[in-house]
Image (cartoon, one colour):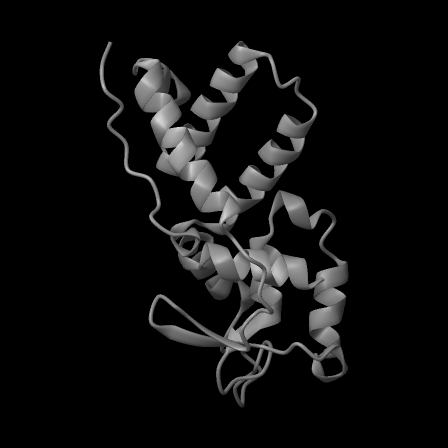
Length: 176
C-alpha cells in the first residue's frame, strides 16, 4: 500500500465554485446513505478527495485506507467549519475588484432578465456570479460610445470559474 500524496485546499476560500457545487450535491446524496455501510463511506471519501485534489478516483483508491481516511477527515472538518456570512459588497478576484449589489431595487433590468434565463443555476453557478458581480466602477454590460460591451459576462465567467473564492461563493448562494 502506498501513502496518499495529494494537495488539498487549506481554506474554503481556496475552493472553486465548481468544487463547492459538487460538494453540496455529494453531501446531500450522502445523507441518504446508511451510516453502517463502510464500502459506501470509503467510496464517498475517495470521491471527496478526488473532487478537492483534482486527482482521479483510481489514483486515490491506490492509497492505504488510513491515509484516505485522514485526508477525508481533514477535508470534512474544513468544509463543516464554514459559517455563513452575508456576501461582501466588494471582492477581489485575481487582482480585480468586483461589486455585488445586495439591494435588488438597484440591480439592472438586464441582470434580472439574464438571471431568469439561466435554466438550472446548479449546473453552472458561475453564470449567476458573472451576472451579479460587476467590475467596480462599471455598470452591467457597460457599452462604449460605439455600442460595444466593455465588460461582457464571458470575461467575468472565465475568471470566476477558476478564481472566485469558495467561501464567498457559498455566501452568495446562501444569500438567496
